[in-house]
Length: 143
Image 1 (tube, rainbow, N blue to C red):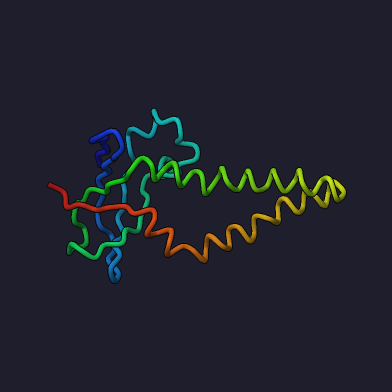
Image 2: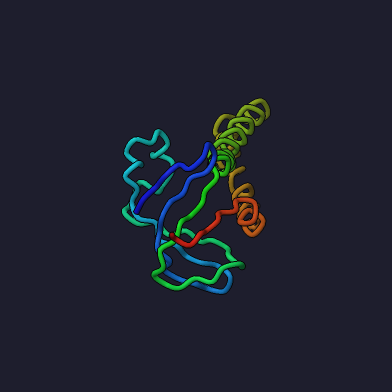
């Protein structure tokens, strides 16, 4: 499995189609040799195991199971994903802690700052279809 940077803002990662269901394609990405040098490998998740599966919505091309493909990722999508998954929840927790600490006891402020994440992640769950469209990952047939 290869991984390459083709332009300033686009990554290609080769994979194999493992499942096809409806208009979505499940691609198995092999372990990437470049993950060892990456600074974000601790939060990425792809470097943790030998194989990762990614679901890609595809309505244009027809693919077959076990076909080699290239997954196209934009660099800006990674930054958006890190913001919504890690940075914004931290800001939400920290600001809730500071604000509630003024009005309530410390332990209540701590609980409120933790429990504020429940509605946040529930809203993300409800918006998962919109997020799938916003975080568009492309798939190309392998040449």
